Image: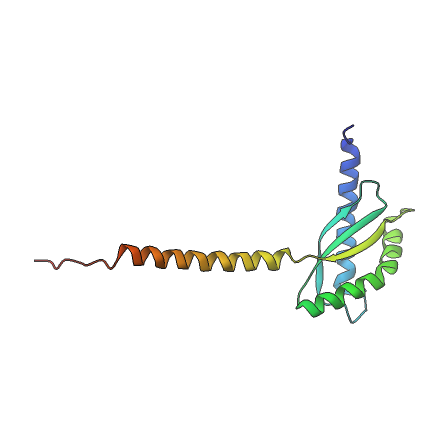
Length: 137
C-alpha cells in the first residue's frame, strides 16, 4: 500500500523544522567546548517518526569531528527538550547524530578527476608529438 502524500509532506516539514532548530542550537546555544563549528546537512526521519538521524558537517579535522559527535550525543537529551518546547509537540523522536563527510569526499573526487584530466592531456600531447610550424616564405 503506498504511503499517503500528506504523511510524506508532514514528515518533510518536521525534518526541515528539526534541521532549522538544531542548526540554530549549533550556532551558539550549545556551550559544550567539544562541539566545533558545524551545521546540519540533512535530517532523516524514520517512517514511524520514532527516531531521527541528523547528519552534521564539521569544519575541522577527524579529531574535531569525533569530539563534536561525542558532544552532540551527550547533549541530545537537552536538544530533545528544546525541540519539544520550541515546536509545542508531545513527542520528539529519539535523536542520533552522524558526521556527514560528503562535501570532503566531493572535494577529493574533484581533485582526483583534475589529476586524471591533466594526465590524459599529457598523454594526448605526447602521442600527437610536437607540432612543427613551417617557416613562412
